[in-house]
Image 1: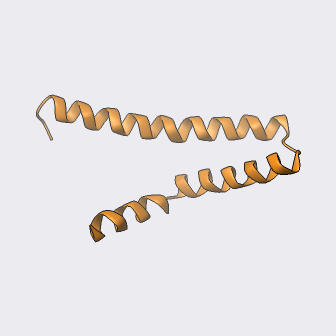
Image 2 (image 1 turned 45 degrees about the vertical axis):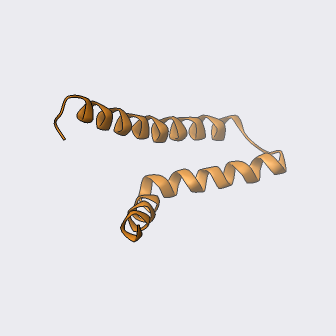
Length: 71
């Protein structure tokens, strides 16, 4: 149990996750303030798409590994 928690915390502290969390915080602040620019929206959308795209690819690779018996 502790090993799983520490692994998740380690993953959360990766550079990719920190950038995504920081941008999400800035996005939330700008949304409340009503000052979201089109340039920021473009950058934010690209970062979020990259982050979730890589997460999805990891999940898909793991499922394929389980499906073909190599793991």
